Structure formats: structure tokens, C-alpha cells
Length: 100
Image (cartoon, rainbow, N blue to C red; front, side):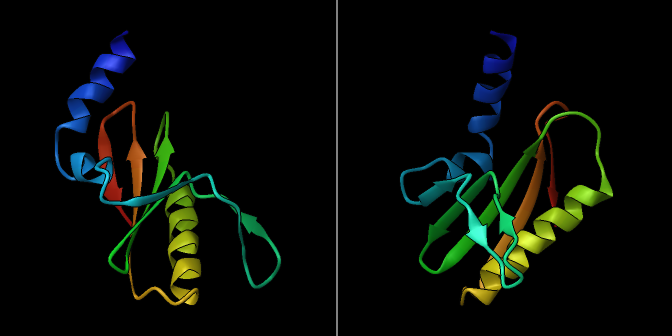
């Protein structure tokens, strides 16, 4: 119940509330094949009017490797033809959002 309450509090704040509106086409944990044939699975990809937002949820401590992971996702989506792509790490436990 505590986790549910924390998430509900976050969902009313920006940018989270916007990300969970019905305006976005949402792809959760969709497999994306890169040019070198590796498969990447971002936690959440949202698409609206040519804009793409990639979010990866993390629990626990921060790591630079996570930033690299998001940057790979963003670059891959740009290679697919999207020019406006944003990437975020959402550290759920600390309620911290990091733009990558």
C-alpha cells in the first residue's frame, strides 16, 4: 500500500502526469533490434506528434551505466527517423528523475 500511495502522489506531478495521459501511444518493454542485431528493451516508450519520450524505471542506487543505457535507447530511436527524442531515468525509490 505504501508503494501504491507514493506512485499515486507522483502521478499528479509533471512531467509524470503528462506521460500517463491518453494522448500518448505507449510501448511498454517493446523489443527493438539495433543495427548490430542486439535487442534492446526500454521500459516505456511514448510517442505523440512525432515526439518520443523514453523512460527506464530503476529501483535502488544510481549508476552511470543506466545513463549509457538510456542514451543507447535515444540514439536507436533517432536512427529510426524520430528527431525529437528525450530520455529519462526514473529512480522510483528516491522519486528522482534524471534527464539523459
